[in-house]
Image 1 (cartoon, rainbow, N blue to C red):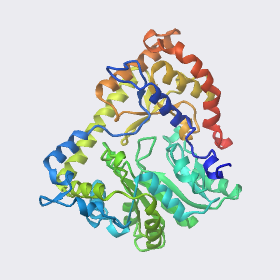
Image 2: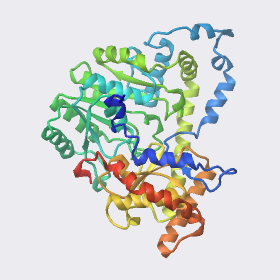
Image 3: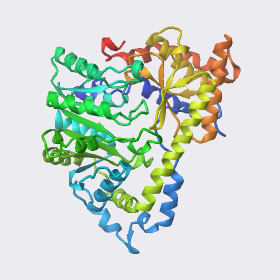
Length: 470
């Protein structure tokens, strides 16, 4: 007996080169002692730079970690069923933390928060609330490869790209917005909204006030929604400062208007606190109908009461939260400078960035031709010969071949330095026209696997790309 169409369809996005790179890493993961020639994971946007700060807080606050209140166990209380609205103490603490990250320029009402099991669940839930199967959401390129799964797979909604290019640093423009909107109309798709990531994944840049104003004017004119995914808002480590879409609405006196109710924020603690395994995300909306519907849907992806209790205590510690934000941003800036400097020494430049856990790296000069086929060939060499898993721009639907997302916050300084050394050696080998032993000693045993994957990876990475992106 066959499975359902949903179970057997190929729209999950798991077959993207973005996820295939993870699979290759998992087969041969780098370990300083056990597997020093393995693949270094630079395709995973995790923040592991400030775990010591979290561990110190836990050691100093044993009651929170032991599920105690004033020395008395509340294990039984937390073990019992909790409704899907979430613990009030946690929602209050989360709203306070979100305001702190935004410089307290805007306030968030806890009752407007819907708790979800991470940003993945939050984004999908919002799409379920705002759009029907066959409708369209406009998303600027390049965008996070997981959106092909999060926004499309179960909802049946289509993503129409807002094409951004390196000509202006991949910034959103009014013509690009209009072009995407008209493209959706030509495809007989009803546009229900725009989704942006601010700061951007994979670009590592914050949206400018001009871009935010453009977006507000655009959704106002079209009568559609705007989703601002702000899960990297606490990672902004240098100027310009982060500006939340909520701050723009307040400054432009949109509070209480119809447009006020058509702007929604997604947030998570996966990036700012480095806790993706805790599965803590949320939706913030001023529309009571969205909050009510999303709250009902959150039954399918709740945050455990134990997690909520622990984090409510941590985030309510204002001194800790403030110090953590500052120190974490300092460490991110330092680590980014290390990567950018290392890449520069190898003759590789990056997009100027001010946020995130990654760099948008320009390797166009290393392509054998200005094609996505050449980009995939280069990517496979970097994975198999250099031993680095990075994300090709095509997996992010970038319209220009030769860009790659390279993560820097999910490893030690020593591992990052080794990754830079490997890449520098590879580039040197290309420039000299020969092969460098330190990066190709494992290439022979990987050649057969690369040949098998070659056509498969390319086909899967492009099977649903718009012709205009190729």
